[in-house]
Length: 190
Image (cartoon, rainbow, N blue to C red; front, side, top):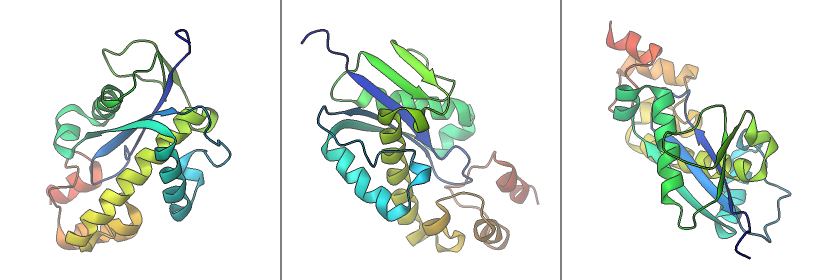
């Protein structure tokens, strides 16, 4: 039993958004989990993603890591994404002996990892992490949209859709906008 591999999958969401934090999840799937519906979060519609996320949470060890807009501005989006990943990994209650990370970069200071480009499409524990991170972030943006209703965050989740850009032009930026991102920066520079 001692030599059993405990594998965590790690993924982040929200790198390309104009508003909100970047969110990562680290997930260790339990042995008996049904993997049938677990795939890249981008391939699952919103309501199914919520159901699958609940199922994953009940059948895994998972943790969330966040880097906020201040950290994104301070460090840049790549470093902030890696910071959110590191926070998720370090917050796991069960410690993995192998960490599989979506993409080609890994956070500093972690050991026993492998980066996998397009891992959220190939590896179930990374797919599970993408689902957990995406549902967490989407629900956060929906909650923020209750207070900031001019940007359609409840449907675009902070991405640069027409409705979001129209809201930016008409109402300006909020504290949740990423000031260093081009469309937001343009509005600040007017």
